[in-house]
Length: 298
Image (cartoon, rainbow, N blue to C red; front, side, top):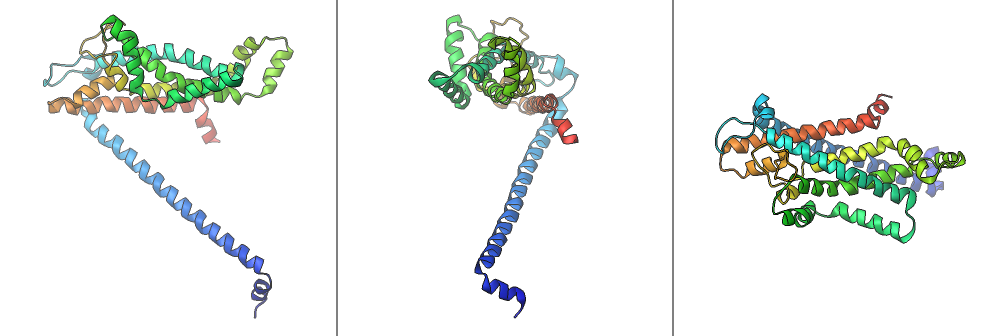
């Protein structure tokens, strides 16, 4: 009998430990294989989806797409200039409304709020995150559209701005909590007030994280359709009056997918491709703002 066999026989705990290590090794390798397989499946699905949309939509991406308004239903040609203009206006309004309010809520939860009231506000923010976005459109419809008897860019911007608030608030709160307390204490030791410490020390230290939250919120609202159906209304004409109905890329995609004309259903892919490109650019901007590329390089 070998020395190893004698040692294993004389020490049952050693055999049990070896068996446990073998099981752990098998489970670990199996987990790695499964996670890698599912990651590949998800990546292939995403690549196929983007490739399919690009193949369908690239044929309509030209100068007319960015400069001309839509033609009459069923006619070839035309562009998405009105939708691009409307989306730019709506996103700008949403940013003006949602970013300051979201940052204010995040600063309150991280630096000011304490006790039951702060917990209640945090609960409301979490609740807003999970509410279907069409509810925000219904709120803006009751608040603005019904009294004014008209769809408008303002109502659409309000709906999208409210959608941005919880995302920006939670991102701001989390990144502010990561700022070391030493910086706060050093500022207070130099005689700075609490508000001045927050605005001139804490917030600048967390700037990259806050920018990340804002960009992610923008990427989310850029493709929202349900709230705009009840607020912006949509129009095939250019409009700079914030109190009149306005077009948007998601609205144009929605209307074209319901069109009986094949040319318009095909053009819907070009709008979807533009939205995908916007989200990709936003993601790259987030990584650049947070230094993700530099960390990867190291």
